[in-house]
Image 1 (cartoon, one colour):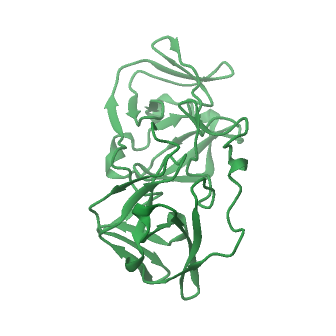
Image 2 (tube, one colour; image 1 turned 90 degrees about the horizontal axis):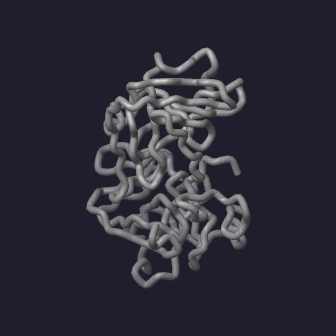
Length: 270
């Protein structure tokens, strides 16, 4: 976060592979993790020699104006009080100078970017979401590349946690599991029996976290998705299987009688 405005990169020792259709188009043991300016999650940069596909200039005017994603507008997604590009911001939104490219394998295409940076001159940054599957060694990689400086920490607690919305108690528990994932706020995962399930409805929404897996969501009054759970999490998050967590940003949380402020994050109302 101290270098959020910079282009940052870090070598990794993992073998990285990606597929488009039935073809493996990226297979590299020399990949880098790259954080472009304002990005809070990394993506991969791979040597051009490790791309088994054409890499050609993209059509002109392909990039999206970054200002519409809050570089200089009020109400931008924020983290720790700073405007950021969270994973919902498209790949082609950037503040880094360079050239947009297209990675073409047969009738399939994926976006790429070659930044004007001497250390990345022989690399192409690739759009993670444009590929069908990614693997770190022989394990499937979900959501985005894992950040070696990012971790989740789950601890059992006996704090009394109460969740309210407009004065209505949605949940209350003295057996929460606290999930720490800096720089995000502490997340309070509550046992299902301590949640007033009659007030919530299953939502069709699903999201992927690179560290926790696929989340299912719960809505209030069939409108607001205010909570989520992980029915089958990745191994790092097994301690919170089926526990329900409410967005600190969208509800009022009281811990041991002390109300918490609603944090401002990319999940806050914009």
